[in-house]
Length: 324
Ligand SMILES: Cc1cc2nc3c(=O)[nH]c(=O)nc-3n(C[C@H](O)[C@H](O)[C@H](O)COP(=O)(O)OP(=O)(O)OC[C@H]3O[C@@H](n4cnc5c(N)ncnc54)[C@H](O)[C@@H]3O)c2cc1C
Image (cartoon, rainbow, N blue to C red; front, top):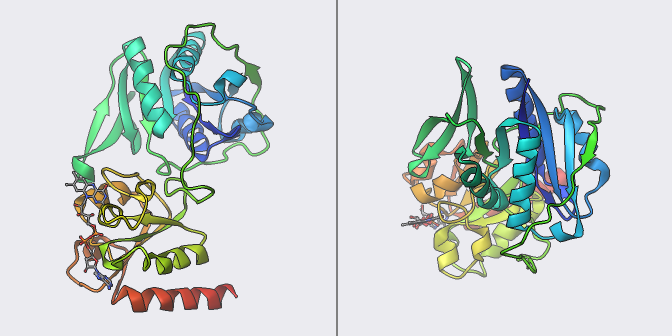
């Protein structure tokens, strides 16, 4: 039986939510092609929850845990992943298309001369061939790609694939993996977090985004207030970021972050193609715009045509009433 290796990601010793998405997708694929699912967890001070990946379909969990892995170390990660692929004769490797995934998996693919599809939004199996869908032209079209190399590497766009607990209560056997004794050419010494404890747009289930229509940094207070009512993250268009109203880490779009929340509320943003490239995967889009002809109005699930400085406070008031 062939093996699918699901490369997971840890933040501060805990599994990131994309890990569950990757393992769940590996499990779904394994059922179509008849393969085992081995999950690989890399980090420092990894909590015992690794075994819980069995609930999402892993048949075995490999854990590489060590002080040296406290920060993302490309050379170590690359060696550990390649060793896991070889030891388990993995033919398919799935990983999240996070910042780390986007950096490490091309390195692994290059070393193994493996074909790779990055930032995939759908995986299909047709006539025993795996095809991965990848958005192109800022999300205007999709390319369906198949990989012919012996090892096939696919990274999955975060929040697009569901995390499904297919085997509740099932713990997968955990195997410790030793750290490779290799020369490290590039060492990450420190990772400085931006944004303090703010919810990151890339991780949020709900995002309230403000655009040029918000008109100033000061006015973003109402966007923050609406976000706080909904336990949402604040997002921004490039126009708002370039104007200096919001930090770049909040920018959504082609040159910002790609997000796929359950709810995306856009206030005073037109829905340019570059912004759409970052949020088209949102499950429900609500637009607040005073222009009924703004491009986003046609694409949004719900639109409120009106002045955001009247609509947003009214929304805040109603939500507060409902939530008590
Ligand atoms: C190479 C490249 C990369 C780019 N990458 C990105 C990216 O990553 N992310 C991104 O967002 N953009 C990106 N852009 C910029 C993009 O083309 C747009 O310029 C930008 O998205 C527009 O932002 P906006 O919607 O806030 O502003 P606008 O397009 O100016 O829209 C403002 C909207 O607010 C509405 N409005 C105004 N006042 C109110 C009010 N009081 N109440 C309600 N509605 C109001 C208006 O009707 C209008 O629809 C990129 C551009 C290029 C060329």
